[in-house]
Image (tube, rainbow, N blue to C red; front, side):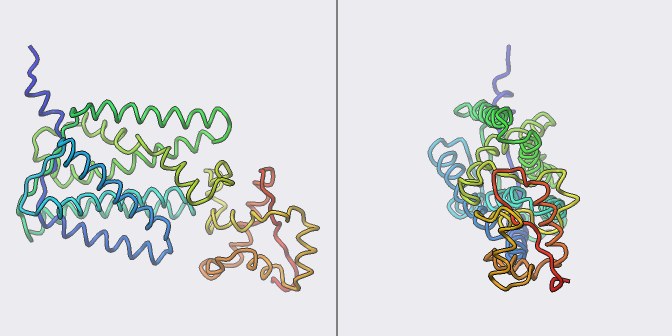
Length: 337
């Protein structure tokens, strides 16, 4: 005979945390926002706010209020608690994903991943090591309610199928699909790892490697492909929906910002060296000044060494000259030296 009580317990995912965990987490999120602003990651900030709203709708409104599959025990009023509970993963995860979508450079991908992982792990450890406010809060979710686990699995498979179709039709490279799935896995791995290391998951007494692995592979990957398609449509526009994105082969060569280089090179009507030279001569600008005038965001010219920008443009135009876009070649003359 199957023990239904044990089955129900195994389906309940619980977090048991101290109140001071919220304080430390808010400090981390504040630092995260400041760093994003300093690095001019405006789109990830906007994406993080959108993530907060999405989590509020799904986690607080649907699961907690309507479906009642989410339960909460604690002294903080639910309306206030869930503002933080949804803002923390909503902003942190969505902003991180947006940074990964932008793929400015290999260095940025590594730095933000390390920052993301170390930051959240230290929050949990600080809450355990520093006895600031150890009042217990407990929040749980029944994964069997309304077949949530099955629904998540089907959605994950659906995302993989969509990505596979795009790859088979040569709209995407296979590495793009694997990259997205890796990003989605890293997002949830960070959450599960930080909760496990800090003991927040362990205190419920039903933690297992199976639960850890399943949540890591499914929870965020159930929407990562659709999220990327929406991001490309919103940020890059329909014209660049299937245009080049940073590939693994580009990492050793791109030293600045791939997307900025792309947008600067993608100027319609300038597709040959003759046309570019004529336009350059007509303006009376030097080669570098002419390139600067082609892109509104000239601030990046002060963020990166000029020689690195020119080298990236040269690499980009040489590598992606066979795409559907027209590119401006690097213009060199004596005044650029």
